[in-house]
Every structure is written in structure tokens, then in C-alpha cells.
Amino acid sequence: MVDARLLDILICPKCKSEKLELKPADQVIVCTDCGQVYRIIQEIPVMIPDDPQPEKK
Ligand SMILES: [Zn+2]
Image (cartoon, protein in one colour):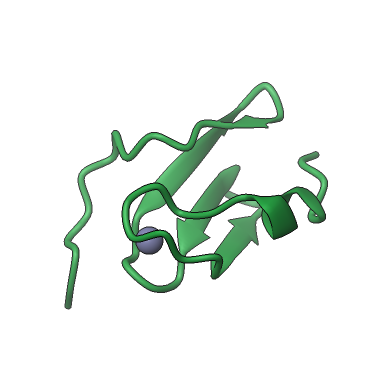
């Protein structure tokens, strides 16, 4: 499990927001500002926007 405290030091590389939300069930981190999803692979957040998501709704 990814340590939630890790979120304190992570920012969204896409929009520079610190508002990242951990979704343990999905093993992803979601930026609540731009909606970008980042995967967590082997407990390491992959802070690369490789998952196509709409920037704005
Ligand atoms: Zn973002």
C-alpha cells in the first residue's frame, strides 16, 4: 500500500497541483484539479500522465 504521506510531497506534473487523491481500491492516484490519473505500480506512483483523461469536464 502506498503511504498516504507520500501524497504530501507529490504534485501533479501536469498542472502542478498538490491536490492528489489516493484511490487504494483502484491502485491509482487522481489529481482532483485536472482529473489526471496516475497508476501505482509495485507501490510506486508513476507520475506520468500516460492514461488519457479529459483535462476539463
Ligand atoms: Zn493535475
